[in-house]
Amino acid sequence: MATSTELGLDTSVVMRLLIGAADPQHDTAVSTLRSALKSGHRIIVSDLVVAEAYFALQAAYGVPKKDAIRSLLCMFDSGDVNPESGGCAPDVLRESLTHASKPGFVDRLIHAQYQSRHASMLTFEKAAKKLPDTRVIDGGHHAS
Image (cartoon, rainbow, N blue to C red; front, side, top):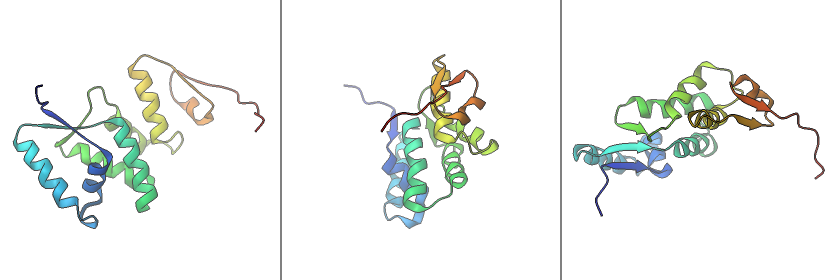
């Protein structure tokens, strides 16, 4: 089996990179990535990992939403980390900085993934009506 020239980071590695000196594994993550880059590997991060890291930054470290978005965007803007093939995260992160909080980053990411597949989005989330090619279902009430 051939070895891939791409290395996909999971959320644990992304979090170590973003948290920095506050985590003892930060230096190990940085040196591992530097070595991989020198060896000719392309470092990628999936949209799913970006979404998970976005929530982890807020839940585990108390990082405000906009700051979480900025941190993730800086990771891509470094030039060392790339989105997965067809990934929407960097564009959606940029868009999320310039738009109102609703719909939020992850809702926008889901929408962008559907749009990249030429699919419309169906949702109960009223704030999503701001997004193109989205149908908001009039909710009604459900018995619990």
